[in-house]
Length: 254
Ligand SMILES: NC(=O)c1ccc[n+]([C@@H]2O[C@H](COP(=O)([O-])OP(=O)(O)OC[C@H]3O[C@@H](n4cnc5c(N)ncnc54)[C@H](OP(=O)(O)O)[C@@H]3O)[C@@H](O)[C@H]2O)c1
Image (cartoon, rainbow, N blue to C red; front, top):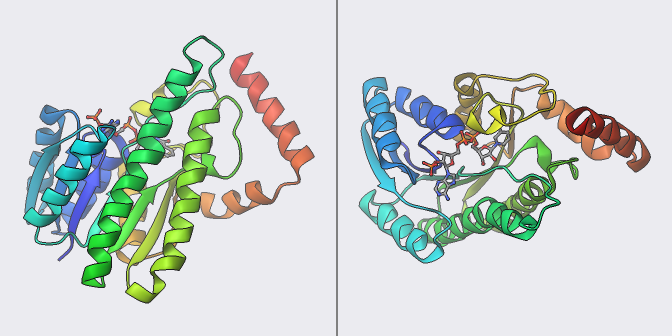
């Protein structure tokens, strides 16, 4: 039976991942800012078959409180076996006076808080010589995506951090999983103006993610087709990538 700490569990992909773990009978600690939404997800998880569900209201961008609450939650669970840094916000390229403020907000949640959680749980899991650390990145980590500067940057940084952690943790028996959603139909993507190829439902993606996490895969993409498209995007010669990017930029910006 796994004991899972999951951030960003009140909505979207996190909510779907929580319910999928619950269907398989695991224990969950659900973190996000909106307590009432967490309680709704808890009820759905208990109905679905979770053995135990804790709700932990927390703003992961509050470094001091998040660090404290995360370690307390790990203690309450008597050692989480899986930690998933899923909480994330979108981050558009911004040409207004608040460009740095919006960029910083995105980097704070998507990089700083995610890596803080992973680093704190890494130390706990290394001591226990077991566990799985997961970060929810994105296919937007593959290249610098047009109009999504801060977001692409944040996800690429997280993906690289996960890769390094995986190599560092081999001797300690701790697995590291890069969970990379394609386009998933959530509140986050409702704001997108461009085309969203292979748009998937959160519940369908969660089945793929939870299978991958439980099997300690290095990289799990959903929908699965992105597993093959992602490395191709990464390898595209720069002029070809830039001309494709310019076309999609035109569609988004008009
Ligand atoms: N949807 C997609 O197509 C897609 C594609 C690639 C990657 N992703 C990644 O998948 C993850 C989940 O995205 P989603 O689509 O499910 O987004 P979403 O529906 O907007 O949900 C975001 C979740 O993160 C939580 N969150 C945001 N800021 C937080 C903060 N400061 N402290 C604590 N929790 C916070 C939100 O909870 P509260 O508001 O209650 O705090 C919510 O539970 C993100 O990392 C996102 O970047 C999504």
